[in-house]
Image 1 (spheres, helix red, strand yellow):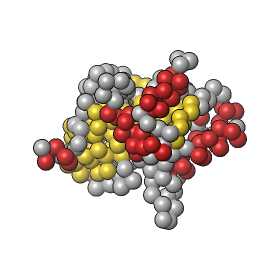
Image 2: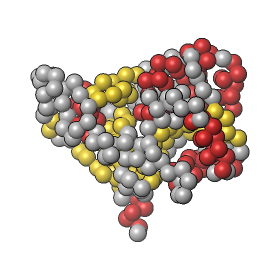
Image 3: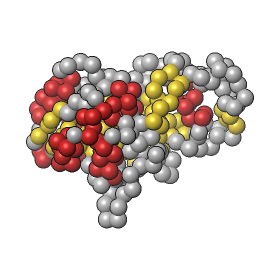
Image 4: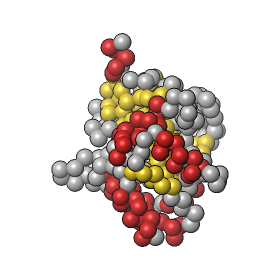
Length: 278
């Protein structure tokens, strides 16, 4: 599964993964910025709470985004795969300027929405310019390769992570969330050991990666984003070790980025960004 093709004269929309537990009341910097990149006062946002089992999740985000100035916000829950084929749901997604996936269980999103006309439409709409973001499980689902579940710990170990197909907006990165709070470095590095093509992005809570049409990631929020670049890996023992054993990796590059710092997913270059000006 490759990302939807960007047509001539168009540019891909923003992709906004959030590490979970984003501030929603006193200083909601991440959600405010999400509304801005969706169009500000003209923003038309569809909230998809499918990952959550809490009945009020969609309504809560509807209220938050309206209070932050979005012109229109509607929650569309997809409880069954047939919902992803409904014309009324597809028409609503077609009108939106932004899509937001809530937290919960990312496998609920992939098993209910994966491969449906709604998922395909969200991919093509992002390729034609609309913003797509999500928090926690809603962040994990955005990439082509999704961490379904795995073990905590700082060391990569064979068998410590299970991958599943995600929504496929991009194949440039693999997301993990609640990163520092749940000690998830090991499972992110293990995911990259399977195939070093992608960049690993570990998102702390109340922290987001705003990835623009030029593939530049800028950090927003109060935590950090850990970028693990496996492009320069010289050796990996992944194919040699048994399940549960540590994996040897030589040549990883790790960047710790805070608000204002950037990473270009195309050139794989990090920058202090606005931090260098302070």
